[in-house]
Every structure is written in structure tokens, then in C-alpha cells.
Length: 312
Ligand code: FO1
Image 1 (cartoon, protein in one colour):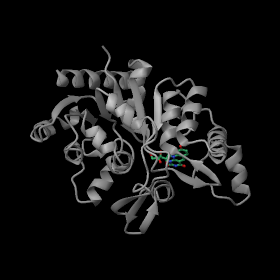
Image 2: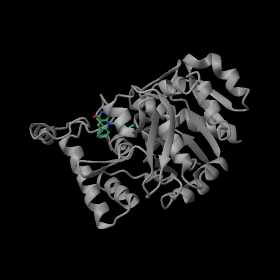
Image 3: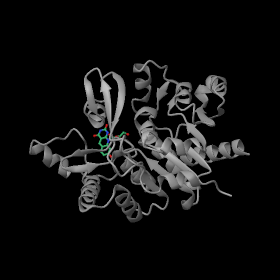
């Protein structure tokens, strides 16, 4: 009997595991809740990078080199923006741009982000349920030695260089979970915290009213986004260091200690297993680096088997 799973995810790493789970679970047994704290207005468009990275990954359209944006892309729009003296710091390909444009048009017409996401998933043949964490705007602000920076300014424009002091999620005080989020969590047998940045991909989701409480009622398994003290991709390890924590899968386990029943760590971190178990968290040590679709499915299978064994 397949488990009913809800996965929480952000950008590239989280999307890969979500893709593996989507390949092995019946479509109606997987709901993925995606971070929207990275969203921003740019060139008059509403851009949702983590939703789009998830959509492109699940649809097999993601750029394999970067993990974000689309493969088989053309760049006529951005090249022309450059000749016109417009902003080109955020790389928008022509096909990707069409998604931002159509989403923005529908949102302006009054459709919700959930409705637009469902429509896009249908057009791309994605059969699992993909939900934004909220239809209300929540924006991650990175508090740094260079001041408070909007997320994409920190992440893309400044390439994560500023020293992080903390985070704020503006709008989270009044945001409510998107329709279906709490229902999916209440029906779930298992919640998976995908290998996404704990600070700026998973914490924003858990900060939306009611989500952390709903997750805490469930069996939760996390997959560490940090291997051998480094993030596979992105600034997670740098953020841990700058905030005064040793970047390690143990720090990630401590980060979510009150939620986790189990943690999946890479073989490189075998030596940390007992420290994590001492937090009363079961540990699975395996290969967590997903180089291809086979790895994604393999890790998905292992996470589900680990969770099932934990729940008996
Ligand atoms: N990341 C970059 O480092 N440089 C970019 O130019 C860039 C463009 C971009 C366009 C669409 C999209 O969906 C994502 C894009 N990203 C880019 C990644 C994005 O900033 C991050 O994926 C998330 O915000 C963090 O996971």
C-alpha cells in the first residue's frame, strides 16, 4: 500500500528528490508544497523561481546544467533588453519568459497562484499535486552586513557574497496556507523535507500559519542538503557558518529537531550518524547525491522504505 506523501521543497535540490518521488508514487499519493519566498516582481512580471524550477524538473524541461530555467532555450528577448539598456542580471530565456508573462496575465485577471500553478501543471502533463505554500505574497529578506536585501538581489545580483546575519519573511504574519495545503498534510502518512536550503527554502514554508503545526503531527523524514560540510548547490553551508553554526548534516538535524523522526544523510557523513541519533532521530546513511534520474528515483525509494520501516 503506497504511502500518502507530502514533500516540502524549494529550489534545485528539493526539486530533484520531488521528481524521484513523483516517478515512484501514484500521482494522487504525492503533494509537493513549494516555497514562494524567492518570488519577486521583475520587468513588470511576477516571477516564482522555486515553483518554476519544480515545474520544469517534474516536466523534464529543466536546464540540466543550472537546474533552473529551461533546456532548449533561446535568448532573443534578453539580448534585445540589453541593447535597450534594460536589466539583464536575472537571466530570462524566451520560453521561460512566456511562463512568467502568462502567469502574470492570469494573476492580474484575478486567478490565484494555486489556480495558475494547477493550470500550468495540467498543460505540461504533471499529474502530482503541486501547491505554493500560500497564495498570499511572502518575500524572504536576507539581513546582511550590506543591509537588508531582497532574496534575488542577494542570491543572483550579489551571488550570495554578503555576510548573512538573519532572515525576515515579509507578509508571513498575514499569509494563509494555499487551499489544499493543510488538507494534504492532514491526510499524509509521511512528510518529506526535501534537500533544500533550511533557512530560505524550508523555513519560509514552515513559517506560514498552521503549516508547522500540521507537519509536527506527522512522521517527518528530512534529507540533508549538506554533505561533507558543503551544500551540493547554493549558499546553505555559507549561511550556517555566517550564523555561527558548523555547516553539517548534524546542524540540519538540529535545525528541524522538533519535527524530525528520521534523517537521511550521505555516506560522507557516516561519522555524524550517532550524534544525530542522540537527538532521538533515526538515521539512514546512503548516497544522497542525485546525478541523474536513476539516482533521484533510488533516493526516493530509499526514503520511502526508511520511513515505512520507521512507522511500523
Ligand atoms: N539563478 C541565478 O543564479 N542566476 C540567474 O540569472 C537566474 C535566473 C532564473 C530565472 C528563472 C528562474 O526560475 C530561476 C532563476 N535563477 C537564477 C535561480 C533562482 O534565483 C533560484 O533558483 C531560486 O530563487 C533559489 O532556489
